[in-house]
Image (tube, rainbow, N blue to C red; front, top):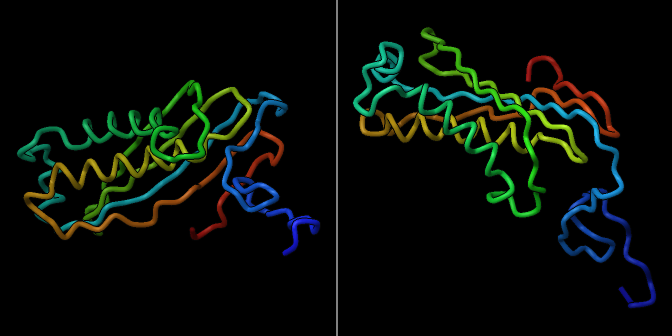
Length: 169
């Protein structure tokens, strides 16, 4: 493309008109309440699941430590994902549900703020970090655990409004 022909505008917001990565300018955006929910799960051997369920894993309270790790992960998202803005989070929640039939731990996270950019990445990072912590705490027992289905469930606030993942996701 010659220098006199303008580059097409990318639909990806983290690229400028010349295709270079950049941090999105949110300075002119309106501050609104922003909420995002994310989820994922970790599947494991039934014996490993039983250790978590009974609270008898060698390293201690697996879910309690994973909850704190998820909260810390949300708070550190801008340090981990290069083009994320640092966000003053007002709330992060990490919840677990045990699925004995599937030998898995389901994780759902919520991140909230009052700001100019969304908290989807914070909710996703919280879920990822919590699940990775479960893996770390149980890997001596079960290296075959599988982390799966990390996804955004819902986001609210901002110019694009309310979005919910389609049913079945």
